[in-house]
Structures are given as structure tokens and as C-alpha cells.
Length: 107
Image 1 (spheres, one colour):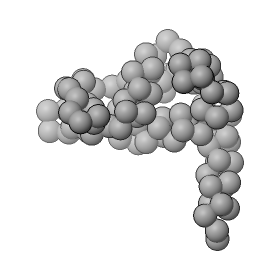
Image 2 (image 1 turned 90 degrees about the horizontal axis):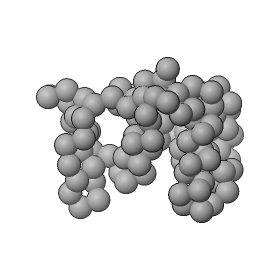
Image 3 (image 1 turned 30 degrees about the horizontal axis):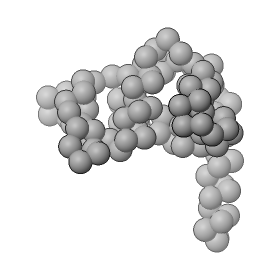
């Protein structure tokens, strides 16, 4: 499978997941500990600390439990000045990773 095909498959999966979660309201879990060299540290527990990229941290901050994933797409699109279509895939991938780590929950 070519790299291009893998990218297309990932984009399709992200759009499918977006359709499933777009009306949910993610709520961040954990506590921000600090930043060093563009890495952001969030503790889920005293023993469980995660290093987040700038994108993952930005998405984590957007997860206030009050806005839907669809609203987050609009906010991200406005903040980075690109189309909503362009932010869906990175947003969904970040939300999926944060969810699997237990740093957000969907309500």
C-alpha cells in the first residue's frame, strides 16, 4: 500500500469518526503541569504524566465540556485560518489519542 493510499485511508477514517462524535462535548481530564521546549505536560494522576505536542495541548484546552466537536472544528479553523475541512483530520486524531490516554472524556 502506498503512502498516499495510507493517507487517504486515514482521512476517510477520520471523517467517519468525526460523523460519530461531532455532537459530543469532550471534557478535559487531568492537570496541566507546565511546558518545556514546546512540549506540554499534563498529569492524569500523580504517577501518570503525559507529554503533549502543541497541537494535542491546544485540542486538550478546547475540551471544556461545553462545546461540541463540531464547534471545535469551527474554532480551530478560525484560529489557524484554514478551512474547516482541513482541521477535521488532525482534530479527530488528537481527540482519539487524548481519549485513549484518558485525558478527555466525551459527554
